[in-house]
Length: 105
Image (cartoon, rainbow, N blue to C red):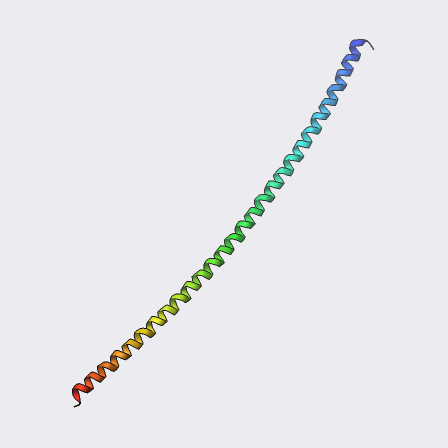
């Protein structure tokens, strides 16, 4: 084997070694990309779950606040009805008393 053949053979060996390194690096990169995509999918899934949980919590808070407001309004309405009823009874009593004074000597 002459020197040029040896150089060509060595260059071919180096090229094969570089090709193997390139393929290995490509496979490593593909694995890293796959892992990053899996992590991104996990993060998105967790974020979606957090959004659902926060939405459910907010809906519960809004429902509780709505019930509180409703109960408060109902209590206030009952109080107003009672006040009006009491006032009406008092006025009715006064009217009856006035009529009785006018009719009876």
